[in-house]
Amino acid sequence: MFLRFFYELKQSGIPVSVKEYLLFLEAVDSGIADKKIDTFYYLSRASLVKDERHLDKFDRVFGHVFRGLESLIEGIEAEIPEEWLRALAERLLTEEEKAQIEALGGWDKIMEELKKRLQEQKGRHEGGSKWIGTGGTSPFGAYGYNPEGVRIGQDGNRNFRAVKVWDRRDYKDLDGEVELGTRNIKLALGRLRRFARQGAAEELDLDKTIKGTAHKGYLDIAFRPERRNTVKVLLFFDVGGSMDYHIRECEELFSAARSEFKHMDYYYFHNCLYESVWRKNQRRWDERVPTYEVMNTYPADYKVIFVGDAAMSPYEIIMPGGAVEYWNEESGQVWLQRVLAVYKHAVWLNPMTERYWNGTQSLKLIQQIVGNRMYPLTLNGIDAAITELLR
Image (cartoon, rainbow, N blue to C red):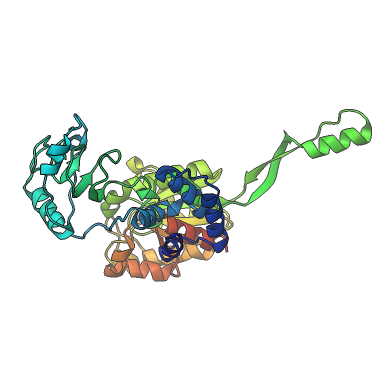
């Protein structure tokens, strides 16, 4: 079983090594897990997972190998309101009552019946033997009893009789293919670092202090400049229109970048970059900044990141006058190429789900202009973008 566990972890994309697997076996053999499933879970996770982005995949493999969990059946989706799942009263049954409860009769029948009841049920239910609820004898729900059913939303095992546990996984948002939270973006951006000691000497240099004191025979305190991240970042955010659907992701990226980089600045544009950008959306017509001015203000050693879904009319990119809000004398393609000619280290982050990219003609044009340096706004996408920026 352990060997199967190891192979399934590798097949799922988790980079677990033979050395880590042997360490895991050694820890299990030493009795650290103490024959408790929770302890065994944390032991195996600590031994075999090096990167938190793989925690969700690990949970799925662990559940499949050691608890017999199956993947969710496609086509059965529903939001179960949290208040339905609260355990107001856990039903206690006698052995005789339990013996009288009949199972539905197998996996296929149970899932078919669950789908039907999700469509029919309109409210929360407690007790009883049919609806999805709590404290009853229905095959679906929590805190009740049925010899064969689906457990939904319960905080732990009770009778160990469920054939399917349907619950939210704790690490779902850490999967590398989903959108990110601010904390996870900070972790991803952390790779974009180049440290150097610059500025005033304000930090105690302990090594030099010890050497100087030993050499001179009296206390000789030495200071040095603080070690700082010297990477400089310039962000261009697309706002308005279809980007309204991606405000949360852009806010999280913006918040993470501001806290991660001392040298970071930003500007806004709409759909495509043209001859001017702005800093405040409320005053974008009164306080616009010429794009040439931006290029002359920030040196070529800045790392440039465009953030946008690239969803627009192709004419907005390739034609003068294509902008939707005013007449632009030169095309957006010309301005993008000018910026890319100055800033060699530049990428485009796209919050649109990657599987939809091929259906957008304007997106393909932007991809070509930026030299295929477009990446999805996911953990894996940011990681790939940073690898490109560090070249």
